[in-house]
Image (tube, rainbow, N blue to C red):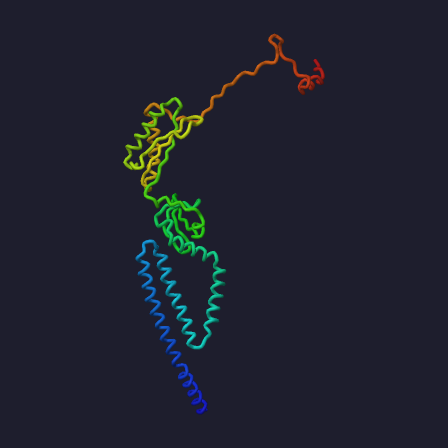
Length: 304
């Protein structure tokens, strides 16, 4: 019994002596790789922080991705120290990656769309957008979804893939927007006078930009009115208020000048039908083919 224990101890000592260098090397590689991944992550984060185009979410994603990639390579090198075939490990990792990608195809497409949105930045936090019916103010851009508030105050969370695959209108990106207010006047009103009144409204409003100059133009001769258009530029955040107040002000100004804003109407002329019976011929007889005349002819005489 004692002899067997000594034999096992000697075999274990020989095993440790044989693999001591490999174990020490693997341990050193693991520690060095861990430290190197942390340092590389820190360097990448500092480099990305210098760019104003990248959102915080994409910075965190890229820095973590760099560290995890380094740690995977370190793990492969450590296993190679013990004689493990790294080619088979890489093949297994690649196969597992393909399987995971197929299983999470929709999720990965949203992640890819989120990365593109964060990098290209067609909109940012606080922007008001319209992505072919998906409208609201952006509160958060994540890797999977974008969180928004609709204009009537409802929370909305949309997968990034749905937003990226649509045409995106950003109402807040540019500093100014054009305001168009259509106004109809009667055909009896003076066009030049109406244009002068409406132009005075635009030039008197301090929120209207002087460049480009505000304009009032005749757009068309409609069925019921001469259609004018007030056109001016204002700050994007003032667009809604300016348009609403101009609609009210132009109606009041037109009416104050004695002009009218007509509404659709029709003139109907009714003409009496021409009689087919000559004058003085009395009441016309029923037509021979009339069902009333034939039916009346077959009625029996009424008894007294």
